[in-house]
Length: 450
Ligand code: PMP
Image 1 (cartoon, helix red, strand yellow):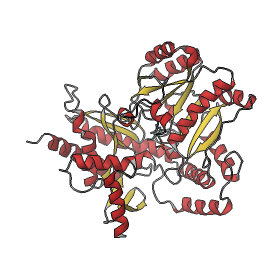
Image 2: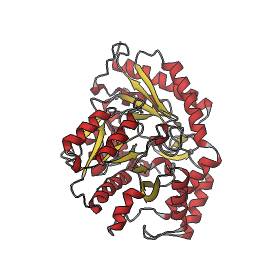
Image 3: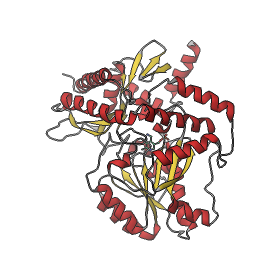
Image 4: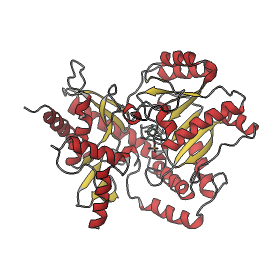
């Protein structure tokens, strides 16, 4: 065990592990005032907690990265996985199996708007975004519109780490150094529909395939919610110019915002929806791409292929996702995300409403962001180099609570996000808010000694 642990810490130290581990090490290196390693070796997860090798119980207030909608360690999901693996090991993605057919029906009939009638599955969010971009281009290509290949994204935003999803996303920190990314992926401000209209015209209306946006901007900016009217206008602009609207529900989907899908808050009518995370609540690597008949029909009519990933719609993952969605319904957990979201928001407003370093508490359901500023009254941001949002996360982790960092570059807010399992209790909400307040104070005090 010791050598295993050492190997893991070495990988983290060398920066050879995942992006999160690299981030964690970077923050730890930059802020040696914070005791202990930021990345933890987890030996078990249960309910809303992570249990570490040295016996700590970390409250998972971020749900990892807003993933664990039903919480950790549900035995009935493990049983479904074991049975599914015994029934089917591997079948090519385009072929129907019981698990795939059940999941397609469940997602389309029970979670998507009625106009969304087609489904395909991948191994996660980035693959789904990448597939949606390719689907939009294939749609136009099959219909004979060869020049419609550009995809417009927003800033800030986050859509994933495949090269195409990184390029269409507006997460400056994660893009840094990778330019040139794909050309032809212009970005518009996240809250400005008129800028979208102008960008489409500037790019050349007949060259734009699609526009992609998150219902609520997540990882890159701490749960930004656009003004009333924004989405209606975006739909009008996309329809007027023949541009497909792709809604990225990877973070907002499957109950996270207190509605079944994030788009329900504004009755958004997308052409393509992508999802991941909550589809399986962390129990299996699976994401999905969902579309209208109108998107898929020209492709089918032309006899063109959509291609697939070897592990697309992997059978055990499909069975697990169905089990997780069933639990959400049987236990009425979407309604609980709404009520516990309100309860968390009330606590945050009470504790931080007048805090000098909190500009805003925002979001929907159990996707809530806290925007950190140097001076609330003067609307002054902390210097970027201070990495205040990372300090707050590290301080919280030192107090055994994981809060999700969400910021993306010099122009984006310094924010943190709460995204716990929908089963979160009132006592756990109390702890989360108490620890956040203490962590903000500690992070700011360290930043401004004396
Ligand atoms: N889109 C959005 C809106 C996301 O929040 C994320 C993950 N944070 C992704 C795409 C990428 O998903 P994944 O990490 O599963 O590839």
